[in-house]
Amino acid sequence: MISQTSDPNIETINSRIQKGIYDLQPDFQRGEVWDVNKKRKLIDSILRDWHIPPIHLVYVKDSGKHEVLDGQQRLAAIRDFINNQFGVFGDEIPLDPLIKELDGLKFSDFPEKVKNKFLDYTIRVFIIKEYLPEEPGELFYRLNQSTTLSPAEQRNSFYGVPRNQVKNLSGYMSHLGLDKSVLGFSNARMAHDDMLAKVCFTLENKSLKKPASSKNITMKYRRGEPFDENAIEKATQSLEIFSDCLSQFDTNIRFNKSTMYSLLCFISQLDSYIDTQFLGKFIYNFETSKNNSRNILFTYYDLEIPEEVVEDLLNLYNDRASYRAENTSSIKLRDLVLWIFMYLTYDKFNLKYPEQQKLLSKLIQTISESYDSNYSSANLAYILEEFLENYWDNEL
Image 1 (cartoon, one colour):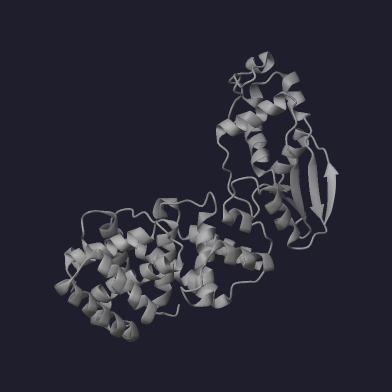
Image 2: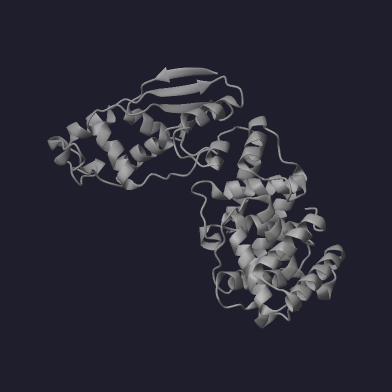
């Protein structure tokens, strides 16, 4: 890896940003997350002629662009200030009388002398060229070890096929309208990418038993090993089916990463021609019942088990979607609860999944017998764990 050093001034840097020569949001970067207070502090430092950390860029030969490896938030703050998106805060500590005079002023309001001085401020820039595919990502990881980057933000700095596959899926997810307004969580810290990487990892291994942990997925990214095409295809199909289900939602339902991961893995196990009208209503009724005290599953379905058992199943699902959510036992239990309700509301009539139906029928019988004799929520959890250990092992 070769690094070239230069010291362009802000006027030159901003010009390159405007022309697209400097790409502030390459695939591995997180979104712009600095609030206006952080941006003002950076501008204040420049106005005081203080040193700010250098910028690291990666030269991409194919496009001729320079992707920002480190310094995205700083460059975005400078760009936004020049574009008059915020003004100076004159009371930053320590107080400076010259900056105090600029309080509230935006860049276009600056006296010409101050404007020119700001534009002439130089920033050290390192341009990385002639690198191995994994080297920029490793440098990004080391530069940001002291910051609170999420595992997904660290992982997505690795140039390679798996990163691009997940990034494409994330973009398609957004194209389908599956954003914060639908899901309840945004992609600002690459939460969507993180969830989709775990889905792809699970689908590739065709089992919920192998942990889709950050460590396992990061190793895959480091090695540049692509997800197999079947996993990508199934993940794409699950997103499309889920998107089709949204028309059956009467009100907004909020998911977290764990519940969305479980739903996409669950959908991947279903017949691709499953009635999305039924599935959409099922997901809506299930989510509404587990998120509220009002259990509407009994309103729409003739369930074979007592309401107390239904509520305990929903509580177990909620508990395993928050506490130890990424533990394999929690993931398997959430999947089983979804299958139990799928069986009780749909499959016992349609016979679409005979193998699962046979096992689930036996499980429901065991739960019913327990309810008649010595039932408790703890006993229910034990029955489910034993069933998972000895009988249930769906292939995804």
